[in-house]
Image 1 (spheres, rainbow, N blue to C red):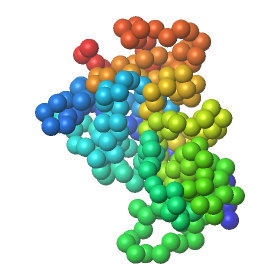
Image 2 (image 1 turned 45 degrees about the vertical axis):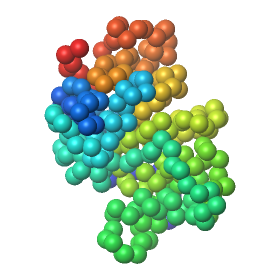
Image 3 (image 1 turned 135 degrees about the vertical axis):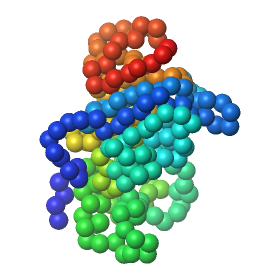
Length: 259
């Protein structure tokens, strides 16, 4: 069995736009949570999204996952609408509530990522098992594949959920606060794993921790209902953070905002 790191489904060698958001407005009931959001993400970019609670970060992920339809504007993922592109997008939620006494192994959790790749009631195939093994290898948890999920630490469980997302063979990985509520050592391990994955997967990550995300992402944006370029991540690591009114352009993310 090949346990090399998970590789992308296709690699044409040509880096181009994989995610385009144009004039996006989205609302709950009558309140617009996202207002005139514009964003272009290139293949193998690593975008960090920061902003206040209630600023629309999770709402934006729901739109990208096809769980919330835009009120106005367009969203294109790999040339498809969000619902049509689901098979190419891996998602790691902020927190997963579960009964820690429930007898489910690490292997079985990660194998859930293969459910969308087969017909209902169709058994798992040797290819499925190979992809699950490679996904676990990518997050350094293959040796713990038979361990009960409830016995793992918070950081280890987060790596399991990343592996489950990888088992879908995504071209884009969406993460909602992946380092929240885990200790600094595990935060560093998760960060290193994500940077390795970014060699062949585009990453869009939400975080409230500006210090943590600026050390990982290539580019940062600030979302508070409207989207603003925040800073080059590399510059932010070297310079004091500027106020929201002093935003700098980003190299790979193109914005057209009316703010």
